[in-house]
Length: 553
Image 1: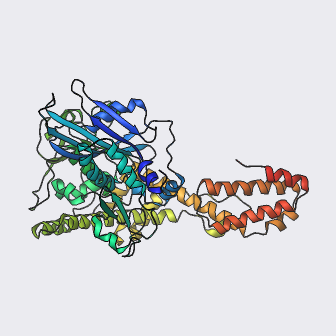
Image 2: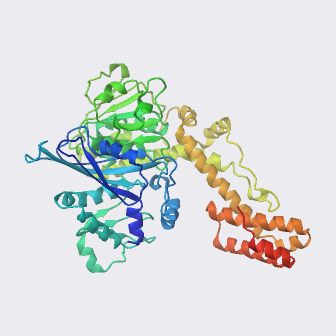
Image 3: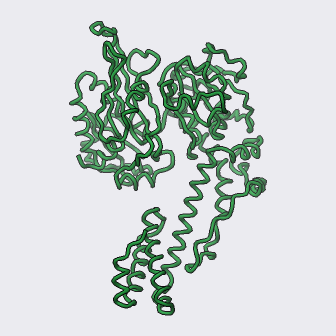
């Protein structure tokens, strides 16, 4: 199979895992690997992650996340690598982690010794497309359980017929008798026309507005009155554990928490479904050091004691579609958390920096009373989080942009200038006139929140990313400055040694532009290559031969 979508779904999907319990043994994990990137030592580990600790009757969907084996280079095809670079941060693959998307079935079967049929279909991917992969599994898993592994081959055949993603187009993806209409998968929302014939629309069975979003309001409903405090905890990278009755609730809640600071990337580790068999179990549960910056979703009651020393614990009950105004769950002090306490609540001693926003609470409460659809409630909540995060991050963006040297300081004959240093106190001084109060009406200790954030992994990850972007921009501007010079005229006024040195440096510039994907126009690169060729042709024949054959590193 050679289509782009086969690469997207089955190169990004490292394996289809079929997990089933045997009668006499604890279990067996059968894998049909499309790529051999998961070490054998991970098989048993994946087995435990693929079967819920809690006995869930019926069908259950959830996801987990685990570290990839060290020393293995993760690479998608060239098309996907380019695609990944153009995606927003919350859709990019994380080179250090894999995602597992699980469809688990447990039903009574008296013909089996255990009395139950238990099997999971697991999709392992590098990509955080939660909604897309959940939908795909929901369509194929029930039928697969009734048939055989040959059914997966038919699924792959359907995927192979998917059209390539085209900028500005709605995607229509057939899979096992239905058509998924996918909006905004890799590109901005398209105009209201598709590239399929009009007769094709009659077959559309479902529409996916996004590939990654969870039902935000449904997930936050159990802790409805504390969404702003949870936003602060996630923003600051605080250790946070979600204790839930099932993997479905734990994984969805963790994913909702991580997404609440979007478009800012959550840069610490997070595990939507964490078990005692995770390879990081000892690392994350030790009492010999402070809890790490990580968000864990757990279901095993054992964690109530093991993670009792964590500073922030969320206990949630069954997540249901809210049909009435949620009851207020009070914040409880950690000392009041008992090992076997199963009452929902937020257990923390954390004091919020910002005053509580009562307006969003009233708006969502009114929506519940008016029976507003949960999808609409999620849109309101997502917009609230987005505006809050942007109000927080804009002053940082503005200050960091000021660290960029002026374009007039870039000389083609000198190395690109360095970014100025980030000085915390200088940034704090900018907040008086250009702080979050320009875009947010929330009052509180914004200064304290910024000071705390500047020590967090989220700031470190965000600032490193901005540094890289601006450094690449400086390199691109330097390259453009070189292209605008008459380099042949310069070479005629300098020695052969200096000219050869210039040619080698220019060749390295071209290689760097391709290797680091500098934001340079194709015409600029062609112009630089022309300069190199013209300089070489002006040199003696022996030097021409050497330079034309000489590569750069």
